[in-house]
Amino acid sequence: MTKKMEAFWEEKLEIMQKKFTHLQNQFDQTVKENQALKARIRQLEDNDRVKEQESIKQSQNTKKLEENIKYFTDKVIDLENRGRRDNLRIIGLPDKPEINTKLDMVIQDIIKENCPEILEQGGNTSTDRAHRTPSTLNPQKTTPRNVIAKFQSYQTKEKILQEARKRQFRYKGMPIRVTQDLASSTLNDRKAWNMIFRKARELGLQPRISYPAKLTIYFQGKVWAFNKIEDFQLFAKKRPELCGKFDTENQRARNT
Image 1: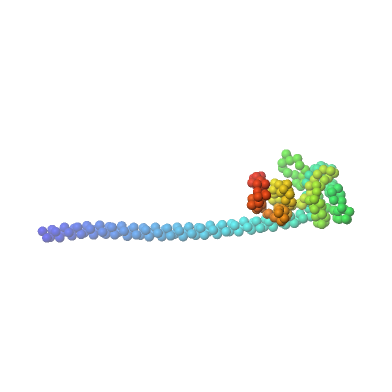
Image 2: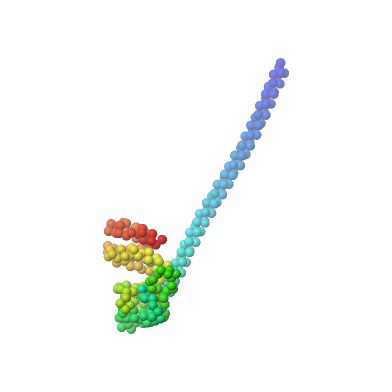
């Protein structure tokens, strides 16, 4: 009887040991899998950190590149504008063969008609060259092409420009505009101020556009300058006298 009991318990013990060994093996396998999973997670986290750092570095490089591009673009535009410093742009002059073939003489007539005092003072009003701007591809456009005139004397060009800012210039009684010749990108930047400029003039703010495309106004005894429409919009919103007077949202929409 005792031997049977011993055999029974030995068999039970062997079965339990096998089960324990199986559970131990499963536990060890689970531990290994957990360790492998943790290692994989750490690797993924490290990869994410590396990618994040690379992304930050790439963003910084992109920003730096954009800044460099803007800097060199601005330099090129500034150099182009400096190359045009002796030039005047005449707008609205009839685009006819009898005028186009003698633009130099026509320019002298414009000076004589609008600011003869420059001639009386013996100023050098000679031009090195004068030409029409290239034709546009828009067949519907009927306005005359602008005339670009390069003067031999910068001082004379400035005197003519100052007179043109004071009053309406004419050619044989026909109204024309005389402005500083500038790079096309600078002209576009200046055009962006058109609506605000007109409204500011209506309100008696004495607006002016200074180089390259900065708006200045005279308000409450001070001169204020703005490089961007957004800057002016913020300024106007904070002044009850100006708030709501300038439709800058529609202005930006037309320029986009």
